[in-house]
Length: 404
Image 1 (cartoon, rainbow, N blue to C red):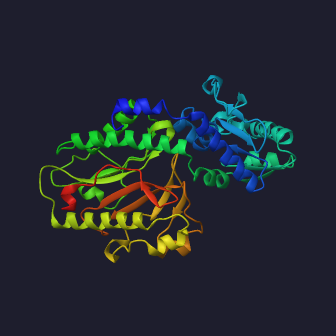
Image 2 (cartoon, helix red, strand yellow; image 1 turned 45 degrees about the vertical axis):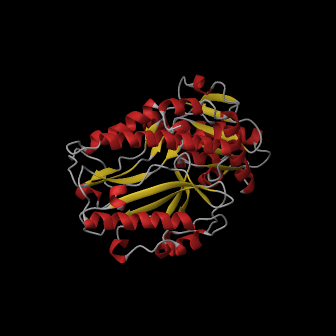
Image 3 (cartoon, rainbow, N blue to C red; image 1 turned 30 degrees about the horizontal axis):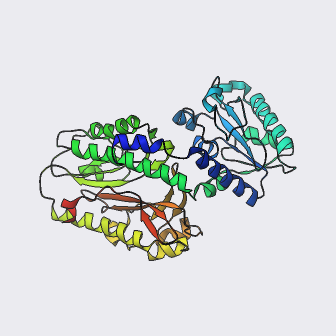
């Protein structure tokens, strides 16, 4: 399947109506469990999850120009950007499409208060008509003026992120088909990057190959610019640049790709640049990162509490702890998502309770680099939790020269 032709063929075989039906049912189930009658989704990734509809995803991440009303029972109403009604034709998850009211100063200017009341009037009418008498509405990105206007109509607003994140955390078989395709297409891109890697190339030039391949294979966008080389690999979370990649350096990256059907492929690798032998220090850093990944992957199992997983996770040596990755593992689906599992030493401050469940997909993380050190190693594997244990979803090989 790891060919462009194989990706395209397999994409045509994914059961999208079943995938969408599962996601909408999951969301409605969580709304009912939490006592809501409906929700309004503004975040374009959440809206995509509930309906399967997309429209200028990155633009909508900063412009609240489309949203959806989803009741526990009743019609799903999409409010879309100007003249975009045609984009949702044929989607069985959407019953009605109406023009959106964009609640931003750039769109409304000094009329923002009036527009917020108009927005709230439409939502309140839908709540009264299709909320089954329940006036509790979950909104994932509530605008303060809109919340105030809804409250004036007797509507109680709650956090919409909780039901949608919990719903998204359990994947159906159809979702897993899409996720595997997302990873497969991203690993094609990684292979092309590895083939192109040579001294003299800039970080930006190498990173562009990931973007180009993702678009070629009908992917969507890349969320970050996390590719660095040499001294820029330490500390982590530096963005790629015009720096020239040099022979003998480490090069590390994190894909963060929204690929097939909008599903996230989140894989990290660190490579050695050029036809040279690694240093002893490079091998040592890589060995620690690889050990952390493999220990924590083998440890994960269904039914395990988040805290137990954190407490039994690989112990990061003190010299690397200050630069640790911010979580041991995190959920992944249409983006990085619930749950985050904090490190044991951070758990009382940053962690929260929960249980690893079958159907969850995780990214297991490692960053090894001493504070003030010359280089660092970033590795990450994407996995599925099953009834039997953990299935590794990512398959791109680790760097043999650094493992030797």
